[in-house]
Length: 429
Image (cartoon, rainbow, N blue to C red; front, side, top):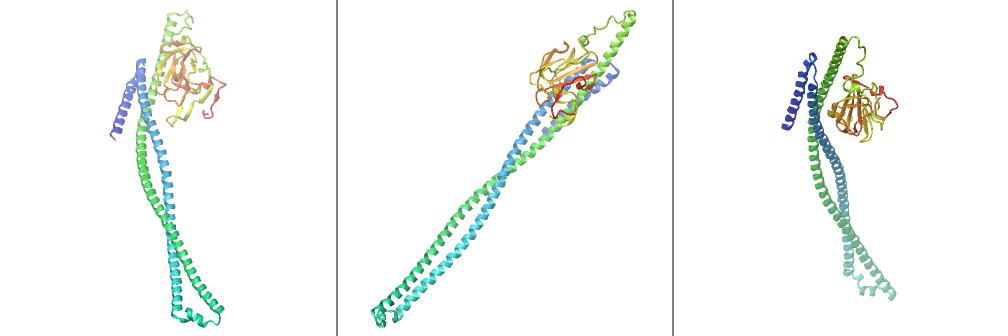
């Protein structure tokens, strides 16, 4: 909160500085506008532009961090969902094995009961044979009418005894097998329970990381919101300064026109018979102006954005686009659209490296986002002269030339002078 408060205070001071410069310039409507006053406003505008660029870098970094943390949280969410699903399946499997173990325990008890019944049956039969003389060897001999009958009786008794023992062995084997299966189930259930403990620990750790990522995302969103507000305030201050610069430039141009008219009238009064003998020699850019415009980027006529309202590709706001964006390659040559005097040659707010030419006939042209500038302020250039090279400085998403034509402070559409252009699908109407 302290950091945000300091930033807001700094913004208020910046806006107040701009307002003081503008308010100081307001009486100029009744006085003469000077270039130094315009230059002071331009310096303040450029200072705000630099501060805005630094603020934009902060917002970009915060948004990059937000995207990275959000991506990590989504991956953690996916892992957490998978782990919870595994735990649920594991619980179901443990429950299934509990039931299977319980069933096998019942089978073991039933097999043990059968085994006990068979053993008891066998013991009962043996006791009966021992207690009943009819089953003794002497009794068999005495009760047999022949040797064959004796042997048959002995075979019958042996088969009964053998059947009883075989049946008891089968019951024992069945019970032992059931116990072995039950033990296997119990061992696997133990493994599942250990796995469930590990999954539960993993899920707890995942939830901790998700909670941390959520807290960080919320903090980043707050930081982005606060810094975006500061960025918007800087943009508003820069726009306000630019509007005042445009107003003062228009006023200065009007004053120059009035002065030129006054001089012409004085010259006509002092030389009533001279006619138009002094024509054609005006100072500054008018000396080389042709009165027409040539295409400023010989290597490219592909338009990526036209004049008019559009969604700004950097700020994301609905704003008026004041020129043609020409999608030339980085380093492509930029030439003067007409002859005149260079009035701006340097960093100019969101235009980045920028050149403005006063053509001396009420028209100006502006060339923005240059990679480098080949002219200087006050230099006179002819139509077609190289003034710089295409770049992506200032508020730009890629290399291109931003080209404007102005009449005083009025923005004009360059397409009124040129034909044969091609357009990107999203260049605008």
